[in-house]
Image 1 (tube, rainbow, N blue to C red):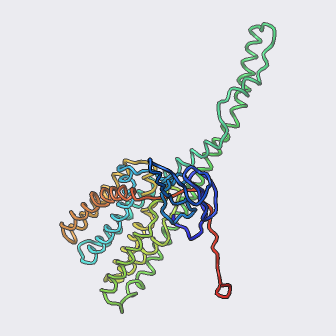
Image 2 (cartoon, rainbow, N blue to C red):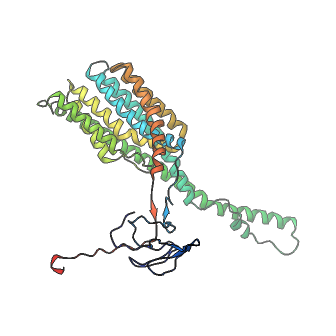
Image 3 (cartoon, rainbow, N blue to C red):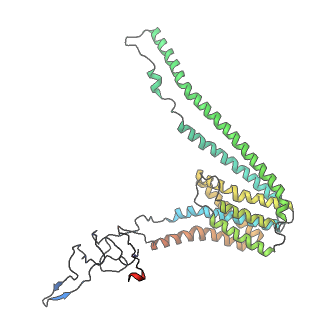
Length: 389
């Protein structure tokens, strides 16, 4: 790390001196020159004094600076595993674009595309809802008091000091059973209340989801005629260019590192993708085409990322299977609509390219990591004005 002229730093052995002070390698402060007599002729050699300047290269070791203290080396396979998130999102974008091409060229029915995606969305919501119930059950179990603790049950039983008779033993068993039932009743009531609360929350959540789905459905039905005539005065070349830049913005601004606790994806990425789908939908001929494509885009870019994050959280094998299916689906879509050469190129780009090549490239770049840590003093700039000389 470079510093301005007159910067302060600690000496090679931790000593502290001002700029221009002579500090030899051993750390003792002496004169400006260090003389050493070698040989029989008594020749004297000069060594430049150590100066407290970080930007000057000197013949003294930097034994007070530490480099790459917090840097951890990358491993190949963990990087490949992390890159599957990028592969999934890029494949989802390609699948949407190929579906638009199929609808635009009338190779696929828009009703089939929207209907199939809606069925898959309902199945994904069911899996996500079941997982929500499991998480809520775990949280409520941690908050509830521990059941089955023997301390309060047996402490309530008073054992007599003398030898009890058979009648006394029967009375003792009856008293213990009554105390046990009384001790277990609060725990049983707590579990029943927690179960009833979870069921009530589940019904309310499903009801809110159904209301939101109906609202989105009706809103799209009302806006579809407007969206169809939205860009009539704009040429198709401009539409393709605008949609391309919006999809690029979606891929660059997507939140690839968010966890399962995030309910909704990044707003900039989602808005860019929805805007691109609206722009593309304005090139379609009928209102049904526009409605189907916009609904499909909401399911792909708004809801599908939530399901992908949750599946990665609960099942790694399911996450890998979904990655393979998405890459394969994007390749099939490219092969049927653009060309099979594009399909094989896509598979090569996702597999050896992004997942393999980028991982090796990141590991290779780590050798140039140079992070310096050291106890130097911050330099105070001296500002001299012209009239001060």
